[in-house]
Image 1 (cartoon, one colour):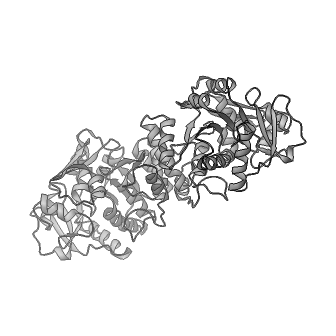
Image 2 (cartoon, rainbow over the protein chains, first blue to last red; image 1 turned 180 degrees about the horizontal axis):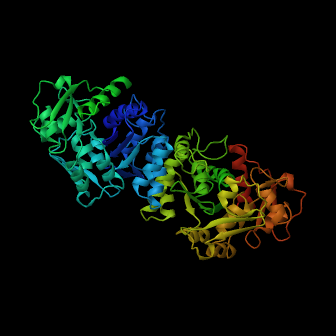
Image 3 (cartoon, one colour; image 1 turned 90 degrees about the vertical axis):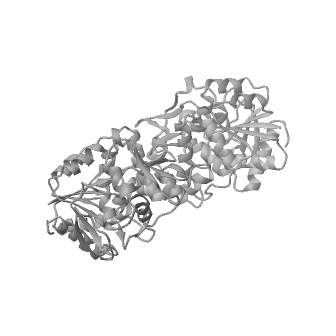
Length: 311
Length: 311
């Protein structure tokens, strides 16, 4: 069985560990992850792809579980030094993390596309899946807020995502073409999965690439989304506030509404079992909090089961 | 009194601390350092200027005294991470050091010249002197050896300067123009100093810029060199082997021969007092090993005294 997942960073990466565990158990053959690049940024001359890296670090066992982002056993001396010398230090880059950004940035500057550089990094990390950026073209998420319109990281990290969001734009998306392999992976999949990531800033930027949205809309196989909310609340981050303001609520119906025409089933937590459901999307109720390996494995299996393809 | 010094990295930087101490004591008014850029390199997408940085770190009190190069309290995680991901890891860059290279590289990529970026870094480090690269143009030192011709760092770090050197080339030097302020600082100086650095790979690359050599040759004030050898031996590095092979010896006469027509006095160590002396250059004998602040201060004062301008 082939699974292709569209994924954001931290929450998505955590979920993908369950799919990788299923793959290791022989329950699925090929796993392709299409990652969000809308929150990529250039800082200190480095090209940083936070969501691709969260996936990479999580699946390579390099991520810091406690902090929830970045690398384990991390130090912060390069950033401290750069800041003391007048460089930008507001975006927290650890030393080990910077090592990766240096290699990526050099590859990009030598003219290789992000997808090629990402494949090399994934190979160097020993990943057994295919990790693709949604696009090699510049695509950047902007948040429209009462305080102004901001690039994703300025709002998310710089402002601590305090400002309420009225609308989200994906600059460059209309002209963007999918990275090599993305459409093929969507068309070859037996199951499509939207990971439990923030719809607006993690999954929508991927779907904002016209050809990707069209390929998912034209799917001949089930597409299953996992709600990132538990009891109407985000486990972490601003997804619940964004849904409340932009979708009008945080019920399964509101989450499903973010993916209208694109999903066949939505996996939700037991805590949301009584909340408003969508009319046209099958709901599967389970425990979605990914507190350990077993929970992640169970959730991944539930997702494949929701697709009608029991693992 | 205004002093302008041409300097390489580690040994030169150590000597400059003595001049800075004299400046702090009010014994000299203005100090300008013209630094070697022949051993600059591009690695991991970073522009590294090892000699300028050695001066910066030494004078800002940031250098690692024990290791003899790089920064104190250093960690090596970015390089380890980059190496594990397929990046170049043969040139040892510490995390704090990388912080500086990120700021410099970003400045250069934004179109600012090396001299402007260096001035900003020196200001951020609180240096009270003017630190200028010899040139903003690309100038790179190449070593001709029996094993082939190599860029400086490939030979020095990559090969551990094992290969004997038959000749040294300064690629780009004939076309290079001095960085803004260099000629002015040479012409305005009351004393010119060549620090105790390796003549071939630290001082000659500076003098290889035609207008710099001409300005030093046309000086109206004394130019004093400090021999980097003690008892015919380098304190560290390959200066003695290079002199033996290319100049035919390691006596004061051989060191002075490296600066023919460019110096009026050569400060040597007591251990070299009996070795062959040059005919046309005044010799000043003192203790040149810079083991502590007092020794550095004394050597700096001896140099100014050698210029006939007692401190």
